[in-house]
Amino acid sequence: MSGEKDFRREAYVAIMLMGIVSMLGDIVYESGRGMAPNYLYFLGASAFLVGLTSGVGELVGYGARLISGPLADRSRAYWFFIFSGYGLILAIPLMGLTNSVWLVMAFVIAERLGKALRSPSRDAVVSVVSKGMGSGKAFGLHEFIDQIGAIVGPAFLGLMMMWTSNDFSLSLQSLFPFYLLMMLVLYTVYRRIGSTVDEIRKQSVATDEKLTRGFWIYSSSVLLNTIGLMPIALILYNGARILESGGQLWLVPFLYVIVQLIDAPMALVSGYFYDKFGLKFLTVPFILSVLPLAFQSLIGLPGVVLACISYGLVLGMQESIYRAAVTDIVPLGRRGSAYGFFNVMLGVGTFLSGVIFGYMIDASISQPLILGFVIFSQALAIALLWMAKQEKYIQT
Image (cartoon, rainbow, N blue to C red; front, side, top):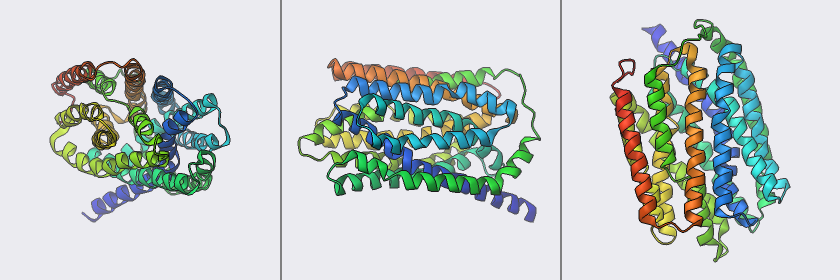
């Protein structure tokens, strides 16, 4: 009994350590994600260009995991990918050194490439060190700690924008110290748990066995869910258009803070319910995915705020229990690959979402037609989710 308690305590410590690294990373890159649409709008970019940048960034950020995940499984160089991925977060403070729309777009995409390199390996490490505590709770706890940074970062950047009278360059450059601290803590965490993770990973063997039908059906349902979810970049873009007239662009990062404030507790709560109810619980975020667009159709800032709140609800579950489900579907030796393929689906969905919604906004497509598209996408996603649930290798 004592040994089991010690094992569980070590699991919680390891998850918290990985969460702290992610938290510091979020202070930097979530600040950039919250600022980029605002900055691009300030530099003269259109809604389509903002949506395209967001979509391409997410496509790269998720699509490249198709390579980084299997490579991590075969090489077992999980920590190499983790360090490389977190290193590319440097692109965010570098945005403050240019006022070129194209360079800012390139930096946004470069940071997403870093996300692609680190995420499959990081998720595989989390899945290993979380044995004995439940995948839903493990990923929920990791996401909760992660989101502290996602709240602190945009809030800090918003205050910097206010203090500097909307000076984008100086505000973004103020993130350099957080980046350096993140890399220092990452190295410390590696020294603490790196050898333990490597030893556990030796107990599993990477295999050429194909991923199961249930995994692909589940991933397809997430693809459709993501296509029908209005991107946060365009919600913030709309907020910037509303706030510009009053000289209040510094408030845009705080809209993103709202998303993260909702995201953090939702990750913990949804992790608990996922462990209790299994895959069918994902019906909840699929239904909630209709709300950001529905609220966005309301006039003025209140509609934007409600859209941010509802997006935060979905995001908290997307970044915790969507990943936890993969752990329950895929054996240990294939998880790096599975997370790579799974995140390709997320990336393609997010890319299509950014392009489609950006085009519909610029083309002034009627709100009822856009809402119909969203409802149709989520209905198909739910149907596929329930098909996946019927597969015998899905844990419920």
